[in-house]
Structures are given as C-alpha cells and as structure tokens.
Image 1 (tube, one colour):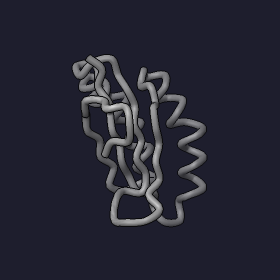
Image 2: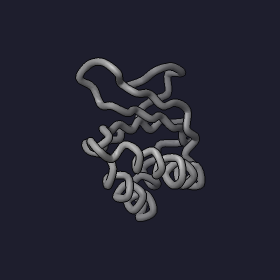
Image 3: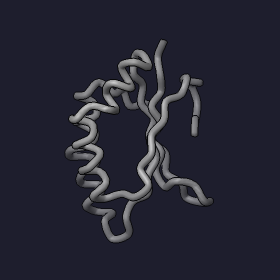
Image 4: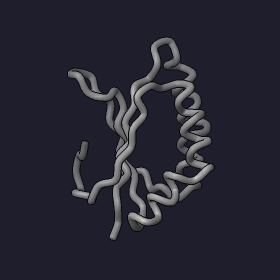
Length: 100
C-alpha cells in the first residue's frame, strides 16, 4: 500500500536565495533519484504553520522507513538544514488532496 511522506520546514531568514538554489539544483534531483515521487508543495502565507510543506509518495511504508533512515537521506537532510529550521517528516495514508 502506498504511503505519503509529508515534510515541513521554515526557511532561515536571509537564506532564501541560497535555499531556492539548493532546492532546485540539488534537493529535488536527489529526492527524485532516491525514489520519492513528489506530489505537492505548499507555502504558508498566513497563519502560524510551517512555511513549507512538501508531499511525496513511496510504494510502501517499509520502503519509506528505510529511505528516511538511510545515510543518503541523513546527508541530504543535513544539507537542507543549512537553509531551514524545524524540519519534520511523517508518514500518512494518502488521501488524494492537501494533507498536513
């Protein structure tokens, strides 16, 4: 059964340009290569919620757990955290629409 990985974070103040360069040039290509099928990305413009929410699909929960605990993922997450704060992820049953 497919599983959705929901990731959230806030961009560090003053790191916006570096963040966008990293996301487009490194993060997204590496995430795709790891097998995450990106489904959605959201930006919070009002309210007290994480600034960025990204959803991705994987074929099953065991695959998701294996990927998100792998050294390759930990390395990529560490690079992302140079530009963001409060990174979190969780697994959810896909519902086909916005999920938080």
